[in-house]
Image (cartoon, rainbow, N blue to C red; front, side):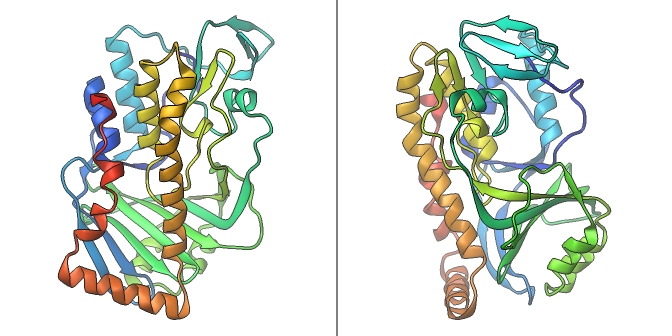
Amino acid sequence: MVEQAPALTEVGAGLQIAPNGGRVLDALGVSVPGVDSQAVHLIDGPSGARLIRMPLGAGFRLIHRADLIGALAARAGDLDIPVRLDTPVTAVEDAAMRLEGGRRIAFRRLVGADGVRGASRAFVAPDHPARFTGQVAWRAIVPVDDWPAEAQVHVGPGRHLVCYPLRDGRALNIVAVEERTAWVAEGWSQDDDPANLRRAFAGFARPIRDVLDRVERVNLWGLMDHGATPRWTRGACTAIGDAAHPTLPFLAQGANLGLEDAWTLAASLDDPAGWERARRPRVTRALAAAAGNARNYHLTGLRRAAGHAALRLADRVNPSAPMRGYAWLYDHDVTAD
């Protein structure tokens, strides 16, 4: 296994691990510290009023990305799987990886989990286009003393903010999305002024404004719709996760789909084309569901009023009902297939 980072350090932000991804971690014997999420709570951003609080069953975890990476690396060590750090791959060729400095490493089979701008994606689907969604997102983590063990979605016209606790509730992960016409370069390594984030959500209720007042550092990135690439394998190289099918962050399934990919491909290395045929319908459905959530979070006018009235009614009558519509996603167990 090769990794470009010189060390596995504190990097990234929060992840929501759903039961479908958690089953893979369990099957691998990987335990990650985190917060057990009790609910998905939709809140009207400007007023702060509850729309619906959908209770969750077991298996929904709120974790820090660095904790997941650390747990996976520790398990690899237990299994004597070598991890070669500080090894940037600049290009993938038919049967070799090219490293910085020009050195080549031959391979019989390569699995690329290096993201949408990685070398494996560039080799497998070099000309696959991306479309700017008209949305940008900020990501930040702030310290908190106490926060409900739930994922909150504060929705408003043309914008929404997701927040949830990490690490025993001592930190709050924030992802805030705003609609824009101007394109922002993709990637979440760009620093932005926290004042821009606070300005975008100045019309939200006081609790959210108070949280944003604590933000000292924030990253900004433009959200691109890539869809699934037309193929995930070329020659002996197979791309998985975001390298093959980056998903918009409105269903919290990026990490979970990547875990599913890894588990299922491990049993199909000699038949990657068959693996892709089996995986593609599920992945395509998840990507479409994520895109649909983005539209629903940003409603305006009469559609917003009608949608919020329906959510409040469901909250009174049967708040668990909406989550049953995702049983196809969360209840699936790739480790049992």
